[in-house]
Amino acid sequence: MQKIINPAEVNVGEQARRVELARRDLINYDPFFRYMAARHEVKTDWSCPSMTACTDSVTIWFNPAFVSLLSGPQIKTVLAHELLHIYWCHAIRVKRVIPEIVRNVRRAKLRIWNQAGDYRINAVLRDCGFHAVEGWLWDAKYADEKLSTEDVYYKLLEEAEKSPDPEGEGEGEGEGEGEGEGEGQGEGDGQGPEGQPGEGGGSGKGKEGKEGKPQKYDTSKLGENMGEVLPSPAKTEQEDAAKEAEQRTVLKQALATARAQGKLPGSLAAMVEEVTVPKVPWYEKLRHLLTVFVAGDDYSFRRPHKRYAWADLAMPVNEQEGAATLCIVRDTSGSCLGDLPAFNSHIVDILAELRPSRVLLLDCDAMVHAAYDIEWAEGVHWPKEIEGGGGTSFKPPFDWLAERGIVPDVLIYLTDCYGTYPNPTEYPTVWVCSGEGYNQDQFKPPFGEVIPLD
Image (cartoon, rainbow, N blue to C red):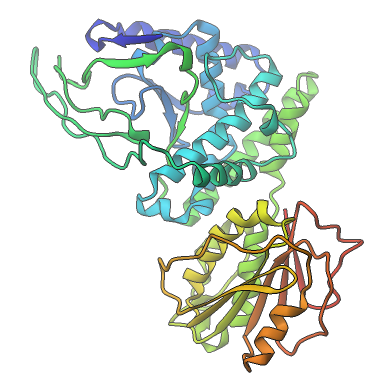
């Protein structure tokens, strides 16, 4: 059912009061959310960048029109939802998963990241007994406590690449605001986040003049985009690292309090562990190894790399163009296909940073099906289509290189590690072992470095 809300008819003060009541309810009666709810400014006014609610890890905004459509328990659900976005560090983690988001591009990826966070958060809220909001994102296949937000993101990204969004990426920004005293008028049009109407336009009243145009909601899908995440406003990676550490401390306090009172669902405990006991992701391990293998004289520890501050790693910075040749092999036998989207995304990001002069990309199952010789440049087209689907042998790529007299500085092989191995090579080899089929005890490669893709 479509419902059009005229902002001039919304009592902003009343909606702000209802949000404040929900916040006090969490502070007074919920041992887990108490600490979090008391630490953040909550704004319910027309400055909200979203048609629903959103956060940048510092402030939480509610759109008054959206609040007017919710019941009291549902407002509490949305507030808890936003708090979990903050303390699950989604506004900070997105900068590592989608580095280009810092440059304000690829809104489509940010939308998918939001959806991934919503699926994981709503699964936790459902387990905790919070009231559902009509149409909120919940799916049993994403409710597994072992799944991280990143896991869900890459699954959704793969689905999105198979079925492009016909509505586009919603790249535009809303412009214009009603200004002036009393009955001042303001005009403006545009597209806001997620392709939604921008905040400009409509008649403005009073000093704020930000009511905008009437807003249309589908009341059967109120929860579909009920809590957007904006990238953290921090200017440096050190600031983000400090904020992330602070959020982990608060989570640990909340965990201890809720556990002492016997009010800690298993899904919440798993969420806390995901954030408070951080593990270095596979792609950061790969980045570290490649930096070591490719570094040469162009890398320096004089200015340690800021990217690794969160993990307490001192890494060198590449100060000029690399001259290395990298060979990347993708196992196309079938067992690794589910991990390809994540692998492709991160390897492109890593290579853009290392800037090797040449990249050889081979697709292989029991034979080499495709070979790409890429002179690396940031933004180069990275082949996503693959050929194969047969059995697995690791020998063909090594033979392919030997036949052509090519000795790469390092070879990276994405595989489940189940197949026939060649003899050890004179150049470094890194096996990125697929999490879907890799069994470390049974299928450990006889040489090279091993990084489980988990």
